Length: 397
Image 1: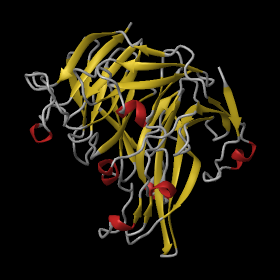
Image 2 (image 1 turned 90 degrees about the vertical axis):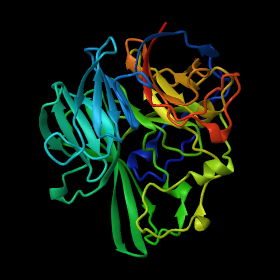
Image 3 (image 1 turned 120 degrees about the vertical axis):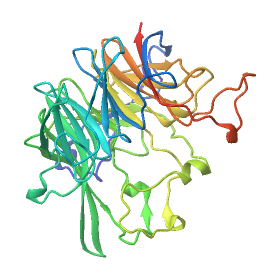
Image 4 (image 1 turned 135 degrees about the vertical axis):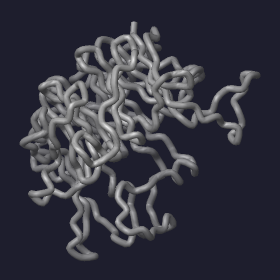
């Protein structure tokens, strides 16, 4: 396997440890085992047209060691729980501000002591419940408001006895000195005693007229925690690089692939918006939107073997017939092992994949997908059928 080495440019993330960052190992020969199409056996499905559960907008899927699958619904502000056989067992939480209630949840995590954590974006907090839905308390993975930590939480992950959350706080001292401080907060598995690492300041135009997508980029949603407490993070927008950190923010390893980012269509660019808009008045005409997608779309660590699965915009969008997505699979130390093709492109035109452990693949069948007509031809755009969301559990054989 041919490897090239270059020095990783991470100066934008103001972490002193980066000064001694090891060189990155970047594969140029492709995966050692080539492209492997997964052999999937369907075990159960929930939701859909005939299911007893109706989903609104799914923001996360996690599996407990007892075999239960927890599905976070952002729109309905609740978590649906399914047994190992796919039978619906219970619903946790609901929309509101009372004990055990949440509004617009953005993340889901299984915590120590058999607790479920449901994260709310603003104010950045996490309600905790017992597995049966009994409310426990409210915790603040990015800091308690009483201590001046009024911020927004964007994503939540757990693993290796740790809880991680990305967030930001706004500083608006003056029009000339206004910025968003973005960070990754790491705490114990209960969401307490957090430390902020990987901090970055990005300029903030309070008028909403000027916005630079590249300057504002942060890795929200493009990171995961391994079972041994390491963080796998897409720290660079325009290069295919995975950076591995310990809980203190010290860089341990970097690896990646020599791949050109996907060029956006005009429609793609119209869908790009800033994470934060301070003013209700803005003009897209003055925004600096990138011509190419970010190099990495998602990262997930396989709980079975620690392999690192990386989804690029190319792997999510430019797929052959019959393939939903193609993931790049690396060893925990960065060897490019294989590309895993998800063979669901005929049935599922749009979806997301989650690794559940025990060789299970959990797939969310997307909404607003184009479907096939009775003649086998793709329906015209104005005839697109909106299909209800569905969660399907497969065994990877």
